Structure formats: structure tokens, C-alpha cells
Image 1: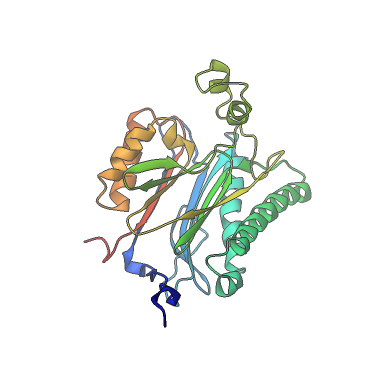
Image 2 (image 1 turned 90 degrees about the horizontal axis):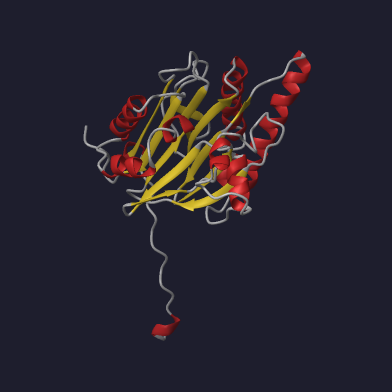
Length: 294
């Protein structure tokens, strides 16, 4: 056989074992707010949902059993400063988790190089949750709150980002920190259209006015496929972190991290020390060959 006819074998992509996933999440009410309207979830999708950590008391932790199909992380930030916001964020995290758990057949059958099945599943989950939240309000004769949602679904060696609102997803790769998510705010919409620049005072006034939210007047879930890999650091957070901690400081912390727990706690300390004017939620995860030394 001619050498030119020999096809090069595709590189073997080794999926991290459970003990090689270093992940941690935490949430804090902050120094000003009386209640915490943020919720988060870190879980593995197997034949069932194995919850590693969450702010929701109603979701039970499970002992990992079958092979991991995907890894799931979510941050939701309730909107409006009322009890409705806390209810909306908790409802959204639980509803999305339940929907994805019952849709795991798509992880068995889908080609992991084909984004379509995962994108469709996540979009469906967001729209279904939005409609169920509105319908619940109609049934109970009251106006429900709204919430942001930043969701990361890892299906090695790909991940899928579902974004609604202005909670954020950052990725640190080869020393470069990138905000992968796009803030769904009125300020960002007007900046994109060229009406404002980032330094305009009017833009700053609209920086936290959402143009899209689950349970709000409008929802526009955006799903983006991203590459993951060994050593790449993923960070999800509510705006309670980014109001007080700059991207450069976040990068410095992630560059020097020894574990996901340590860097979450350090970033939380930074946000609280700078004022802590909002609820703060942080989830950090990465794949470490051999695992993190204990």
C-alpha cells in the first residue's frame, strides 16, 4: 500500500476519570442583601443525576455508580431583589436538571462531534422551564420572579454553554482568560448596535438591566459549543463576583490555583472584601491528569 494512501489515525481522546475532575461550588448572601437569590448545581449525568454539590436543600446527593455520560454545572441568579427571584432561580435549576436527567438517551445515541443533539436538548430545556415558570404563576394567580441561567454541559472533549441573562462563563486556557458568555443586558445590546461605548455613563446605568431572563418578559437562550481539555479551567459565576472582582484578578487567582475549592474561596473573599453588595456564587472546574493531591 502506498504511504500516501495510509490514513493517519485520529488522536485518542482520553476522558477524565471521576477522581480527575477537580470541581467546587459555593454561594454567599454577601454583605448587604438579607436573602440569597442565587442557586447552583454541580452534578454528573449517568443513568441518573449524581449531585456533587448544590445550594438546593431538596436535591439529594448520590454515590457515583455507572459510567459518567456528561458533567453538568449551573448558576442561576434570581432577578428583582424579592422572594420571587429566589424561587425562580431554585425552580429553574431543579427543572433543568430534571429535564436533562430524563433526556439522557441523547447522550447514549449522539455523536459527540455533532453539536445538534446537545444544542437542541439545552434549548428545549430552557424554553420548557421558561414556560413552566410562567404557567405556574398563572395557576397560582401571582407573578413569579425571573432568573438568569448559565449552564455548562461537558461531553468530553466538547462542552456546551447555555446562556440566559448576565451570569457568566469564563475559560482559562494557556494562561489566557476569555469571557465566553455574552451578557444579555440592555447595555450590551446597545453597545453591540453601536449606540453606546463601554465607557458611556448611560451604558453603565443599563449594565444590570436584563434583556433576557427565564420567567421574564423575554427569554433568548443561546447555546454555544466550546472545546475543553486537560488543564483548562472553567468558571461560572453570578454578577455578585464580577461587580467587585476584575477579569485580571480572576485570571491571577485561576493561574495560581491549587484546587477548585481553594480558588473559589479566595475569589469569594475578594468579592466580600470589595463590598459584597450582591449575592455571590462561584463554580470552578477542571480536569487534572492523575487528580489533585489531597
